[in-house]
Amino acid sequence: MITAPSPMLESSKLVKYATTDPPVVFTGRQVIYLDGKLLDAAPRLAICENLSDQRVHLLLCDGDWNVIAASTGDSLVEVEEMAERWYRGIEDKWIKSPYSEEEFRKYAGDQREELRCSFCGRWDWEYGQAFSVQGSNICDVCVRSFFEKLSG
Image: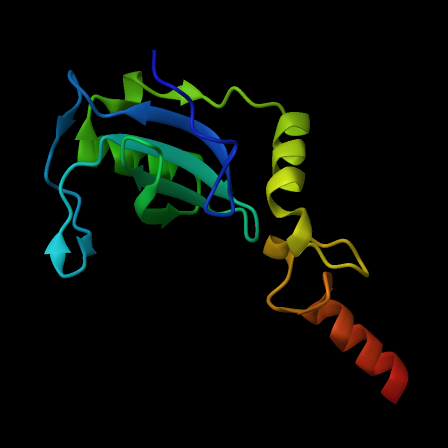
């Protein structure tokens, strides 16, 4: 049995995951360059929902679920079809994320709490930039809001 990746990979929420071992066949239709070299088959794949824009990512991972490369689509179906073009037979190997929404939120809090805005509570994927001083953060959304109130 394959060990599931963490609930969050690269600021994206895990939806499903799979290994590319037989009977899956790498088709060679994946055209991704990494450090100037054409990337070969990845041993593990994860489909994740980007938390900032809700787009769907196909993450190509090593055997320890470290992300090697990614491709993006507008829907789960689009990304599943892309994965099947690149890895024939993968459609039968997908395993749904074992994590509940509550488990995901707990994991996100444990891993990224220090990146939340200290004023509004936004997560790091909900803002563009933040300023941090002595363990406190203020996001660009709050800075703009405070500026408008002070200058208005």
